[in-house]
Image (cartoon, rainbow, N blue to C red; front, side):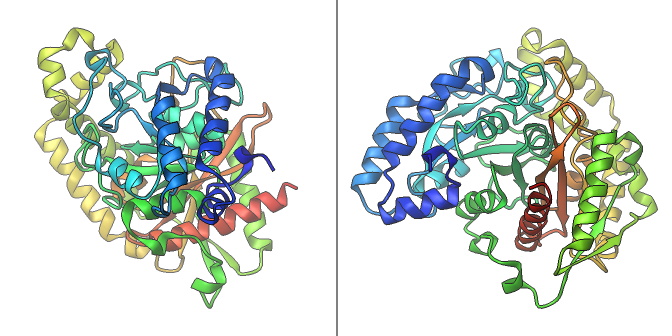
Length: 433
């Protein structure tokens, strides 16, 4: 088996047993980057020499932790003390932080090898940068964690860090056909991440399967309960899955509608699972708009320095976003937060008869063209509710591009959400073979 085809969990086991060398795994990743990066353009910086030196030191030393010897990519919104961090903006070209973000520091402490920085859109907003979708270079990889999703999808690295404020983990993962895990709000510390929206920003992980994403998140959070194990060890009754089309269902394209229907059929036929329809409370009809108001208003505040000192270096698209945020009134912002508070209380009602929800991750497969990152409409409500979500690959559109669905859990039920996502993903995989 090629080292690049190993899952992160498989590689971690072999690295711990010393039957695999970190140096060999890192070299294989670097060789893959050499071959594919000219086309995919997922990286802003590759720390070749530092990564190899780190791998060699790990091979010669004691076992460091859950991520011992595993190469990772770090979204260029997240500070690294030894690599440039430009936030996807010319304003910060060559910017060198003096310290690692907490997530990066903890990843290194757990034994990870930081391979480099992955491309983000401009300040993690909607202005694309250079990354292309590895499944078809003419299509967007999504955003804003575009480089992380593309690098993982193209086997350049087994694990990558991303962030989400609206749909910046779920959407690129869906478009690139990988797994992404957004924990409950605050589940992974975000110190050292360039702020976008104080009440929404969330650090998450990307991988090629759910156990790998969970392994990475467990190492960063200290929550070993997030590690995926057989569902039967966690539950003595069937897993209750709620099919949740959400109020945005009218924007679902045929490939997403088909993926939802196929998932429903698979869950109904799978032993140990029960499928139920879930209809969201009436207040949720306005929740996506409330999230938009909150994000716009908080973005305008977070970009105060750039707005006041570097306005001309912001893209026209981001200038428009900032102006829209400045136009949100205090009354609109407060009303949006009041609605969100009511909807969070109503989550108890939503999950009364189910353990997790299954919902769309995006309207459809990745759109053609590189001037857009797609629409986060199906992710906004779960981000503002602070729920844990996991994107799982769920098939392909007729044009061969991946389609994703997201498994959504109650706030704080991250472990169960990951277990359920793994079980559902396994069922979908089996149905396609």
